[in-house]
Image (cartoon, rainbow over all chains, first blue to last red; front, side, top):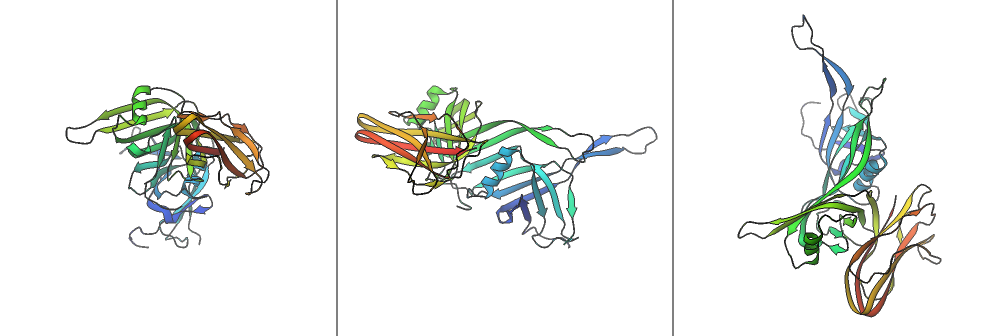
Length: 138
Length: 242
């Protein structure tokens, strides 16, 4: 896959695919950094610690049964780490279209946030609590 | 329901309907993340702490409206019952309920502009519950509400009931007595009373004592009994299982 315009990313929350609701999505992979620069180093030296990954999405809100509001409120209320799977393109998993797989919790949730005559949307950040799996197997 | 434009959000605070004067609302539910990694973990894990919420709302200043006059007078009150229906307040619509404290309220404006009103509320020890509307709107006669299939109450769950009376008119002590019933079937052939609110004769809100599960019935309704002469009471009743 070469450069492309983000048109149809894939997002699964638990066992429910919610790709059709995605308006913005961001996958951020990070690790804590611990400086270990010492005598003799020619440059700053850092060791990588635990993963601190997160997925941030903006979704169209839907209050219907088992849709966005129900899924996110259940995650927030039960505090159960839930599977989050993301692909850049909603097609088969491949080396060129890997799926980012993790479990996550949501500390904050806004069931409604907007002005009259605006599209009902919800922004949420999934804080990942497990090591990322990058699945490239179709 | 599906994707939609925000039009008919209902904000009820302590029996007052704030919605007509507001044009913006934000409800954020929060739990403080507490990192709890241990040896052997490959990723930072978190536990979630106590829940809080923050409600912000704004609109147009109207000191003749009961709600904003009440807000200006009683800001800072605690344990005021709060209900937000994000999409609409029809029977079976989603409703978030809790109790608020530490309100902030203000109004301001520039000469020549519409005077603006805004407020904020924060949690006061009561967790948020997410439920369904069982009764909505003006009632002039006794009515059995429509059956709503909200599911059973599990053994570790509670049934919550919230009531707002936002308008009362009539003579001879117009009263609304509201109860929440359950039944195993939608025809309510053999209903069971689960929550009965105190009879209401004025604008007010009530948070019923939660009822512990297990309740195997899956159908629910509100029964609104109206008395008085030419009575008219505006009733909003919400149930939640959590």
